[in-house]
Amino acid sequence: MKKYLSLVLAVMILVSAFVSCGNEIDINEDNSSQTGTQNSESELNNSSAPDDSTGGAPIEISSATDGNSSEDESKTPETESKNPAYEPQGGEFSFPNGLLLIGDRCMESFGGSYDNANLYYQYVTEHKDKLGEDVNVYSMVVPTASSIYLQELVIDGENYYDKYGGKQVDKLGYLDELFEEDDKVVSVNVYDTLFEHWNEAIYFRTDWHWTQLGAYYAAKLLGEKAGLEIADINSDYYTKAGKYNEDGSFKPFLGSLYASAGRPQALKNSPEEFFWYEFNHEYTVDYYDRETGTKLKTTRTTCYPNISDDYVSSWYMTFLDADNNVCKINTGTKNGRVAVVFKDSFGNCFAPMLSSMFETVYTVDFRYFTGNSVTFCQDVGATDVIFALSSFSAMGPNCLNIGRMVRR
Image (cartoon, rainbow, N blue to C red):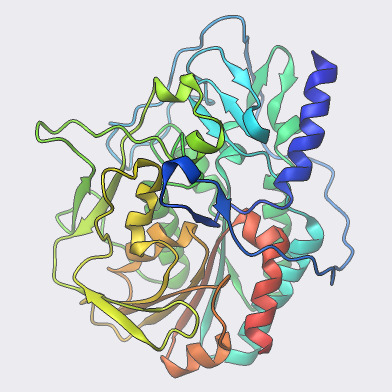
């Protein structure tokens, strides 16, 4: 068995190094594997990895018996985690198509590198140098689900974070130290905040992405760093919306990880709720072409265009109409603050949560944008620039696209 797991691990790590969570998803569930820009350039800098991993004492779980689920998706937001660690529902532990299936949750192992983290740091800092002292620049690298749910998980004596976590938490801390030492870019390390709320629905169990509740907690921390206060998620500023039946029950969501993992029965038997938070005030969203960000395609009165119920695995495209556009959210908040969010698909549900903090929010997908990123920020009068990327984008080969943006 151990030989089998070691062989699978080697394949998983090789695959994970070239897979980005933020890549586009085909709208057809039968062909929902992710595609996106992959880069083979090797302009890497050397660095040494820290030795110690982060996390508390692991909790023993035996795969021979079914664990009890400690997740409660109906929990009221803003409550603190009362449980010491994630306990998977059920006793199935397998590796379908290079993914990690633990009970009713599917995740990726992590393959980001310190070398790419160095490049990401250099490119983001270069934005700050070119934009000058009058523009605030923030780095918010979003951890993947495996960093949260493997952190204190031991199964049959085997520490799953040590084996499959790829030292993601260490690498997030390494980036944090780089930015703090330089003291130019503000690092917004959201890991501890998300870990505090692990037993709320902050990540989808069947999809690559976090939920908008997780994005809210991250936006709240950003607000604290930026001297801005976000509207409380439980206030009348928001209305929770989503894919629901007439009787109020949720329509079963099985995301793109479910399809990529070969539609395992453990996930099929445990679909999840798909939801978002709509604003209770008037606002508009201008959707531009994703390449230049200057050709207006359409204007809508929502950040959440309707995605057909027929395309269940693609419901995450609800957020800002997926990765197809540069967007401008005209929020109705009057404070003169203009944010530009350079993002991958994790930024799609994050950017709308800035509505109560900024007067205008632009989103730019760094994977497809063909213009100069500094010029774009200057043209729109940015006061704040936020890099909101998954850890795969920041510490994988896609980070090279950030360098291309700033140097065009």
